[in-house]
Length: 177
Image (tube, rainbow, N blue to C red; front, side):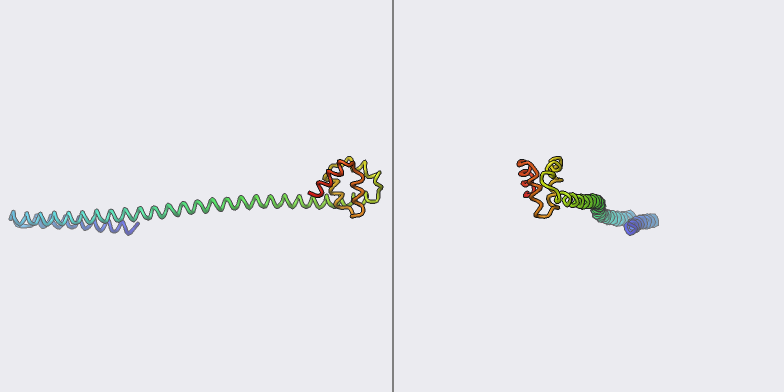
């Protein structure tokens, strides 16, 4: 930006200096009208050339400024998109951390549930089928399946025998699926 200012200042100084120089030349020139006219024509020609150069330089400067402005805008857009992406990643990471905490809690709860189911399975495996039936009848399917999974293979049949035919079939279907 500073270079552009200096170029413009130099160009303006050149035009002013040329104008002053020509003014002094005309003022001090002999009163010969033909010579004065020629001198005035040369001065006008030089002024027009200087104005043309100034116009060309102005156009070039405007084009350069537009190009720089476009580069700056592209960088701004890129910065904004990176900033947004960064915020999105942070949000996603926060959500993932919360999800991991939740799943860890669920796993701990499931491990605890499995341990309790194993204890209950051990107790039920020592009981007769007729004594197990009322207990299993009042439990939900998920709990019965958890107990079934924790029992040893020889005692698993007792779980299904203790249930009604329909419920045993329903639980067997869930075990297979």
